[in-house]
Every structure is written in C-alpha cells, then in structure tokens.
Image 1 (spheres, one colour):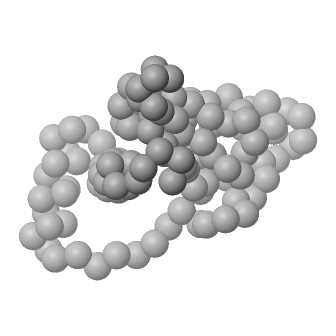
Image 2: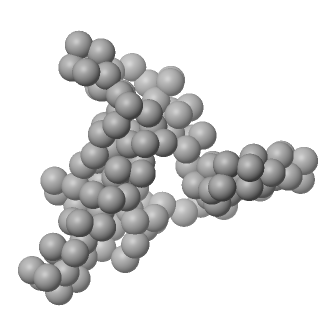
Length: 116
C-alpha cells in the first residue's frame, strides 16, 4: 500500500486553536499531520504516513487495507481544462494528480464549516 491508496480528511483548525489545517488518515489510527496551508499539511501527512507505515510493517508485517474508498476515480474533463491543469502542475513541479488533489482539498475545506 502507498500513501495515495488511503483517503485523507482535511479539516481547518480554528484560529483560536492556532489555525492551519489538520490531515487525518482514518484507516490508519493515529496517523495525522498539520500545517499552516493545505499543501503543507498534505506533505506533512505523507511524511507521517511513511513513519507510521514503517513502524506498522516492523510490528505487524503489513499495512491495513483501506476500508473506506480506493482513493481513485475517473473524471472526464474538457481537453482545454486538462491542458491548463497539466501546464499548472508542470510549472509548480508536481504531478497532475497531486495538483488536482490539492485543488479538491482546498475547495472542500473552503466550503465546509468547522467540524463538518
């Protein structure tokens, strides 16, 4: 299993608690990360996943399979939008999947209220 196989929950941290974003991986108890921005929180979650996975493999031999979602879906988009996303991903030095995930997470966080 790899980081991309597991669904993430991205939640804003209230300003009175320091602000930023909290990322949890529900299928991996205790595997959490936080940072000031969504991008940074996801990057920290990737690091937390690697540490959690190493410890779990040493202890139990393998990681638990994702119980919720596969983390994959197919979405057809116009060619022009695909081109714009691909160019933006290249200019930022990230994969198209990582860019799309970041945009989705940002959009969800902006539309959800605290605790939603």
